[in-house]
Image 1: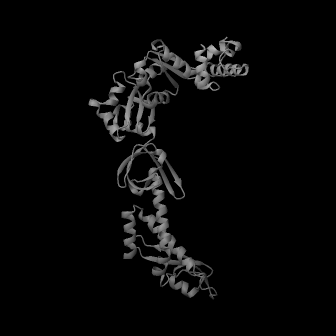
Image 2 (image 1 turned 90 degrees about the vertical axis):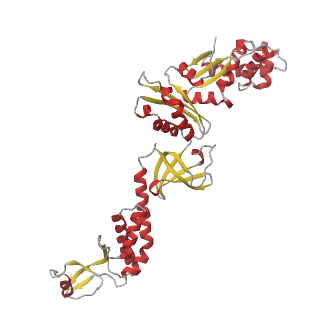
Image 3 (image 1 turned 45 degrees about the horizontal axis):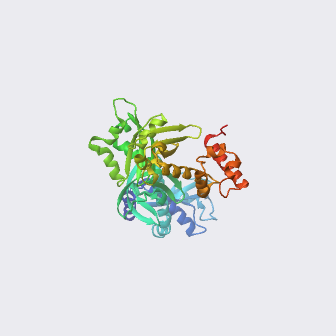
Length: 422
């Protein structure tokens, strides 16, 4: 028994998780290459390691001749028959030709090659283990940082990469910390498999709901859409395929435990669970809740939903820094425009709203918008209905400026409605 080699093989098998046969084949190949490089005129040896005893033997292929002229490639008939009694002239036979110092020198030369083969085998095994796991959630430990990229140690010696764009901006990580992440993709690269991880991906939230809510996992319910601003807020639209199951209630869970578990994993990120509807108006109402909407108008050609709310509901509907409206737009895939009810506005609010509306039109801007509103032109449509001479009476408006303002209004109206109103 080759005890030294046995110790190496057992260590690689146990600690590195590499298959025993793979290790032995790597060693055979490395020793073969090392012997070829050690002497230019050396015999072409085939190395064989006994799978049980791990004893190393080398065999050389030689042609049987009467007179030996090339000792590396030829063997005399008498010597050949001592090794193999049935040997014949001109026949090529294989005889044992293990060099005297083969075990020591060749093993040292082959060490790096063996390690390279083993590392390659490990990389191949990791890729095979993870190549079909994109879309899963895995748990690992933070190993180190490369600038803003987090490297996470996973099972079986694998390493996941979480770049800055896949991190949650409100989260900080420490070396050794256990984290869960979503596998975005697994790529086989020359340097080894790259496992791209994310905690900011919307599907991370989707998978958490699938793991936590059994009705989603078994197909009774379905997640139809997710809009997420990682670290701050997510909207999850769900629908039930069984009328006896309330989709929102099932996601919340008894005493809110299901959604609380998800919020805890997301470090306090707010979750809005929305009842899905194929009717766009209903979906907008559900998504903007708890804000009470007064009127919802759908413009299908421009895929725009205009929502009107009372003054006291405006900030609730729009949300902090516009987040509620923005997430609703992402969720439904339409532009959402939230406006205050003009009937509930006082005179100053109406003037301010009209100025703001015209100022947003390219080619008009805040200064001219204010002059137009105070002259009685409150909308792009109102400007288009006027003659150029009506615009020219406004202070500082030249005939050229009047034409410019009218053209800007026409362009804005056409872009919104797709046609010029007669």
